[in-house]
Length: 237
Image (tube, rainbow, N blue to C red; front, side):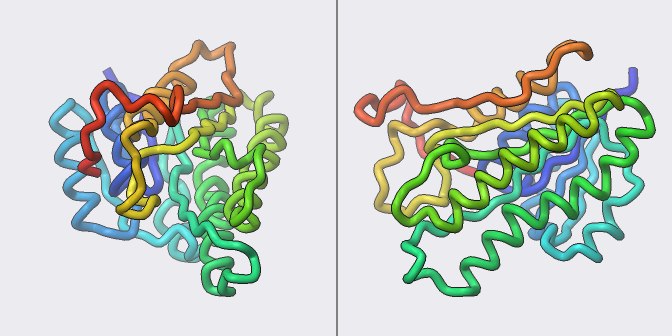
């Protein structure tokens, strides 16, 4: 039986890798990130669970390269996962840091989604799932850029959902709280945080709902910063 195809951006490590490995149980995969060697490593892990994989090494902030590599691909599920975070007060943030976050967290959503969404609409089915953050509805000191980009994710996703639902395409946002990844400094206590596979399970949940049902927004959090995970093992990806 033909498997559906999921495209995951930022698939080379962290949450993106966990999502790819989780969806490999049910989907064939198009793995997208900048690092070809890391993508190949993820590809091998996903193939071990039965998925066919295709690796595309591209910088999703490059709109010409993204359009060239992704336009016309058959994609049933798009997971917009690529993201970066720099937590600094506005007056301490450089223009380079600001533009990098906007380019990855905001502009790449357009480039990637615009490349694959027309095929979903034409076929009358598909699902776009974007990894947001609880910062998409909260604010904090040092969050002018990061929280701003995640607020954009919320507005973008809800508007897109209203635009394409009558064509049979669902749009969802998964909003994690703190996740044990290398976005945090090495000295950070991460034993209480979510693990990447927790976010991957949330993505699998929203994309496996019945065709008539849409989970548009889901928020997942660590239970408590005062309660370490039962198995607080370091993340290898």
